[in-house]
Length: 154
Image (tube, rainbow, N blue to C red; front, side, top):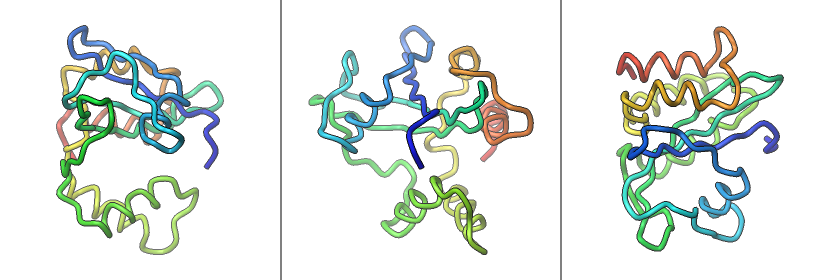
């Protein structure tokens, strides 16, 4: 998967707004490239979403929740309660362009175990919809995600 069409947003709880973060900065924060802390992000629990976009639409919204250390690095957490195999399978299956037989079911099984742990707070939903880089396409994963956050369903 290439990075074209990827957008990262950070929830600013104090302002109840989502702020876009440059994709390269988000990758550095996640240490996919040499680490660089995100400016203005203090230690504590922070919510992010990654929006998968193309053709002027948002197709998917992938929630992230991190315990950020005072140094700006992502700290160790286990918000989901997953074991190593589940984390590795989840990471692989979330970026797969196609799923082999049984993989979609495996992804859903792992997600169900994690529940709503990574979901942004419901009170941030309205500002998230306003902050999306593009409107969600009809009948897509982004709409499903927004519906789940709104209803509190897993």
